[in-house]
Length: 291
Ligand code: GUN
Image (cartoon, rainbow, N blue to C red):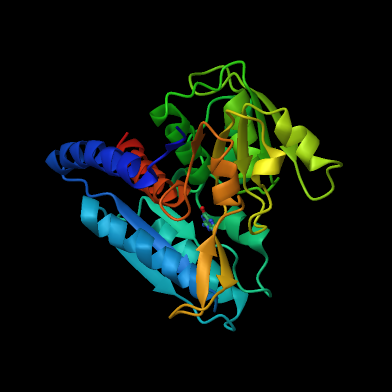
């Protein structure tokens, strides 16, 4: 029987634990604050940011949302970040990526105060992660680690193949999984669009994490019996539905399920975990800022 890893259930548990930390902070008169900033016309980004804000409200984090017209000058975004950096009630800042084309994403990330960089994207935080003492573990990779733990899958000594080398998922996840700490100690291969014979790599893996943004790229034919499959992809594909699209992952679920010992669904797998770990990092930032 293939285990379907329930990301909503694991995320609920993490949120319940967080509520206790948030209550403890309240006793010290601190309410964690998360600022989300959206500068994009992308409908999916708008949905993600709304979900993040709603999740804040549910756990007692103070949510602040700033929306900037996608065609506004980049300086408007930089000024917004400067103000949020200076605001003592804001402990975490998240600028939803991708930002509008004319804005330099690197400049945006560099501008965020590293102590408020709850995404863990700032080079200072990337450096700390790679060096083995992360300040904030990036949300999606941390969520993947928690999902593995929930399914009693210890990466130690396992061969993990990550499909995708993004700064948001592939690279930080590879770093987390090779750390000499619980939830790490794996042997990691990072594959990408220039990898020769991807299927040969995925068939050798104990754990496959698909995070490449290609709808249903990984199918059952590419997996060995008993593989643990984590699907990070969320792709909108045209479909005859009310909205005109449906969501699919980077894994072809049905055929992969036929081979996997455990697999995450889309939706309801990694997605809720990304949000839960964002709430976790924001709470941590609020605790750290109080010394
Ligand atoms: N775009 C897609 N995923 C993320 C994320 O985790 N953080 C931010 N800031 N933007 C994203």
